[in-house]
Amino acid sequence: MARLEQKREENIAGNFYVDSTCIDCDTCRWMAPSTFSRIGEQSAVYEQPSTSSEEIKALQALLSCPTASIGTLNPPQKIQQAQNSFPIPIAHNVYHCGYHSEKSFAAASYFIQRKEGNILVDSPKFNPALVKRLEEMGGIKYLYLTHKDDIADHQKFHDHFNCDRILHRDDITSTTQNIEIPLDIDKPLQFESEIVIIPVPGHTKGHTVMLCKDEFLFTGDHLAWSENLNQLIAFKNHCWYSWEKLAESMEKLTPYSFNWVLPGHGRRYYSDKETMRQKLKECIQWIESTLK
Ligand code: SF4
Image (cartoon, rainbow, N blue to C red; front, side):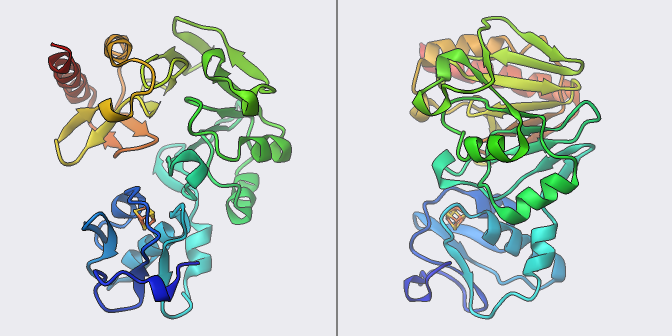
């Protein structure tokens, strides 16, 4: 729970507030942009929710905050409604799980509902309300991990749902050595119909991305949208393996068509496929300009 005695002075007066434990992860700002903003080096409430929909969004952000830094002065009446809204639909059969974990550096995770078996993409917090909702939606067949950083509560999800965890062998560490499906690939793998896993070494050596139905690209920490730059980006300051390799890996995405970039960190992006192709090209040109 957020601590009232640590409430940031930058919050506008009213029910919702952010306390000083905020780690500036950006989650609340994109989940509820009409309520939260960056003021100083952390988030704060710049406008109190004024409609029911804004209140639900603010509560979804409160539940997703990895450090429980968002609070309300009064007990939130709609908290159960907000809990039941997870996972939050994005498009078709793809959902945002919310409940970001500090263990995954606040990365977003996703849920794909499919008749062949559901897929959890990266790990949210093992939260009982979310787990119940995922049970109701058919459980989890696979837990696909884009890379070694965003694994959070993977063991709890495996133990509860008996799901097979997928991670590239080059990103396996002591905490993931028992995963069920280690990937030994340096080329794209048609994992199941409509699911392709593409190795993209760079951010980490064993980073992969997953393409679903030629529509959704789950990018982990490889590729994201920047609101500030108005373009697709990669994270040069958080590239742990090789920026040069990351540049090569980005090129490998050009043969593919997709409408959505759904990242762990950074903002998601949607466009028609032609615009996406152009945005990816601009991103590659930008990365290449940093290599000169
Ligand atoms: S979600 Fe929490 S930690 Fe992240 S920016 Fe908002 S208040 Fe800060």
